[in-house]
Image (cartoon, rainbow, N blue to C red; front, side, top):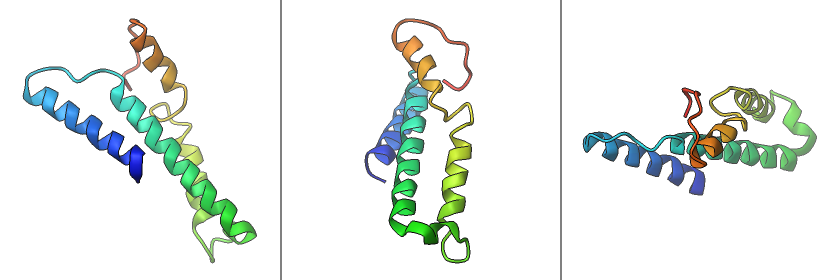
Length: 102
């Protein structure tokens, strides 16, 4: 899980600490962690898929084809798509994007 998992857990801990202190968690950080974790998972499954070769497409041998398709589909969701990075960038540059996923 490595860096992506550590980033997600650190972000959740920071949000919990902010809430406990009566503060609002930093906007956009959770979206970055979510995007990073999704990208890391997709890359890991893609590496496995490539390593297995043609056997990866046969579901009776391995679930990799389904896993990769599920990750690709999830990547199109507004909460984990690369487009969320536009909103995070807007936040970091002082903007106020309307997205509820930040």
